[in-house]
Image (tube, rainbow over all chains, first blue to last red):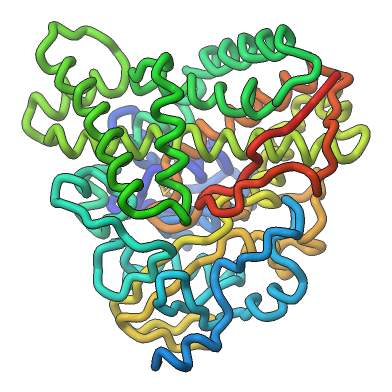
Length: 63
Length: 407
Ligand code: SF4
């Protein structure tokens, strides 16, 4: 799985950070999403899917 | 659609409040309205499409072809819009679209992100502890809404914004009017202006004094207003949004949650014994209680297909978060409250780019308030049945007017 985030779309809701904190973070400066790793560890894959699902802005893409 | 035909449509929101605080609609209404996409008439005389399924609500609120701007002709208003001047709408970004919305919201996203809310948890904890001391001193019996549910989020948002809590009677009364669908428009306009004037004074005082405070208004004055990125009237509108949304929604969730937890013996005990289960419990409370029950109105700017219906450009749509949160396709026996439900997909905070900016704060306040209440008041019970409690049926944010408790 590869993860891409689109900071232009992100509205800083933080849902991704709640779902998978080892993969997503929020920028101190603007609160927008920061991707910590583009390839999630196996144990986080389900939660990354959940993060993409609950992202209100459609800012997370999984391929 | 002609006016004659419109009178045959079901009314939204329905007017029968006799179903208690936990059912969203009575059975007959639910049959007429649960659609999944139903044409309804509104008290303002316009019509709209009511969208109630979880998947449809998500699709709708994430769709770029819908506007949140109340002033656009055809917007499905739940109550008449008071006549507004240009100044009245400044800064109210929940009613803006596209770049205009993004520009203002982004000035606040860092403020309410999870990391920052974690930093202010000690403040929330202190506020909860002190309010519970007051509750203890006031009773038994006591009104939990007045003594606890309302003061906690009010004090927290005041502290964060830099608004004196001593003025709470003033802004709480006006917030209530603002959210009341049945309040006369003249009164709404007057009270919004009073709130705006009040906030403008606070802001101007910070511009003139040598202000070194670290509250949000002070920082926005220094970092955004003084640098020319934000006007005073825009900051007034943003502060107004945060002040109203910051205490009304959470206060109603605390009151309703307490009533729900007290309904079955053992629920508060379980919370006291397993406080680490509190975050999941909070999600299920948000799902099940969904305080924004009348839904989120939007205007279609282009033709959009939702739930098999073609919604045409210029038509109104209402995304009913509360019914979507009871969608059995997603939540199984969705009309039951289930503390073990995996409720993370709920839409209580909305969806799309307007999703509640304060959700990490709301979650933390709810969690800390309920855990401490369970810990400090093991014998808490209510002296009213759910049918007897007085509910806020005409408010955009549903809740309890009061909750008589004893211990
Ligand atoms: S869930 Fe989506 S909108 Fe929210 S912070 Fe993450 S990427 Fe941004």
